[in-house]
Length: 407
Ligand code: NAI
Image (tube, rainbow, N blue to C red; front, top):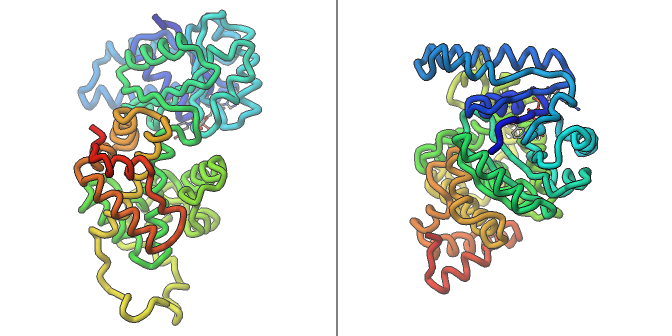
């Protein structure tokens, strides 16, 4: 059983992961090169735990127990007695590789060496070790103490023992584990792309504005946040970079193509909540100022405004059609992830409900809507646009022929 955990990097993710492990009664050493980061992490934990006491979720004794389980250290060597180390430093392959090599020189041969990377391949990180079979991806979601999901990603070098031990450990930390193949975006950051991409595409086509698309996803689909609200929350710079990374990593598959709109918002500094302005405006407390979208589109207001033929212009956007289009693109992506063995059907659905709070698992949603509905919708989009972006997953097509369901 894993009892001693070393965490490398005391930023947003590392400090959250330390809290999770300490709460599960592991002895944690949290390491950062930057002393300020360690002090910030310590102060942040004090604040979080005090708030939990105020809310009645934990008592003073529990707070002390969690705090005493964490030691803040400024030398990597201090992690030498760890059973498991999780790295959460800057997202840079060369830096991560150097740290892994140094770490391997200190820890015992049984220690699992994991990375929390969200975009680098685990195989490339593992290749820096003399014993790559002990390396695995352990991908938490932000904020780590609150989000139930953890993706566990074995590299092609990872041993079965390492994988099993990792799954058991993370499950014992009260998390839901989804095992994902070592491919770009793992499960969540791959399957979720159309939530943003198709919303941006509909905006770019002039089908509806931000507020209408957001409203459609919330009121028709039951999503907690609309795509534009969520992009503002994540940060347009961060979300754009993930999209671009995934697009490049998939050898420019048009399904993942980024949007110029988001790129321009990012370039303009309209990053979302943290900047006070994104697709919406925010006050100093990060609250949306009003429910109307920011007027950022002088071009659309110019005389060339609506280039569509008269018969196709409509003042009233069809919210159900907007929702259906995003949903079917999400389902298609989830089906393709299953088709390509990225994860099991259960893990794909768990990933989306527990990693990004979708109201339902996408494959269960496909069953509910009917596989024929999904295929017909995808084919209608493909017929309209003749773009590879709208190709229907062959798994859906096969299931439709065989009258199968996912569950
Ligand atoms: P962050 O910037 O908040 O924290 C990184 C920390 O690592 C800093 O405190 C920095 O001082 C420290 N650091 C940098 N180089 C170091 C080194 N060589 N040795 C020791 N410490 C070092 O970054 P964040 O957001 O916590 O991300 C960390 C990792 O987690 C990245 O790989 C990122 O892709 C991944 N991730 C981030 C998520 C997020 O929402 N922020 C979600 C899931 C994964």
